[in-house]
Image (cartoon, rainbow, N blue to C red; front, side):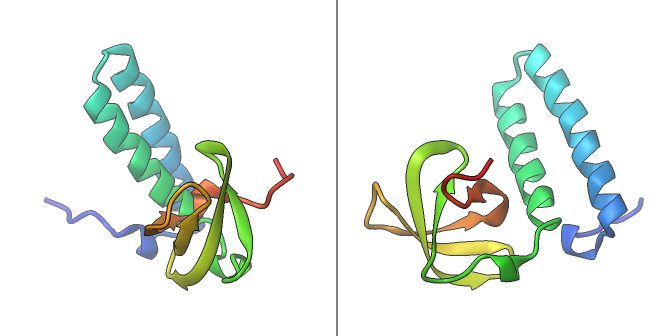
Length: 108
């Protein structure tokens, strides 16, 4: 049995293939109404997508919009790998969010 590689060890091409595979798995899970499985697959996809981004482009002190929550702003306090830690505009609890879920306000 082959041990699966960590996303951080995959090449860009391998990550893209993994994202495509997860997209297909998500489609099948959704068609079969397997909601819990779908959520797990979508989180894996989010993590893989984060490894295609440069964490250095996400700056502590700056604000980003949450892709999954339009209109909600996330202020980064610090970075830890592909996770931005900070605060949502709707909460006082510090949380970590994969960087693929963040975008600069006003950008697509």
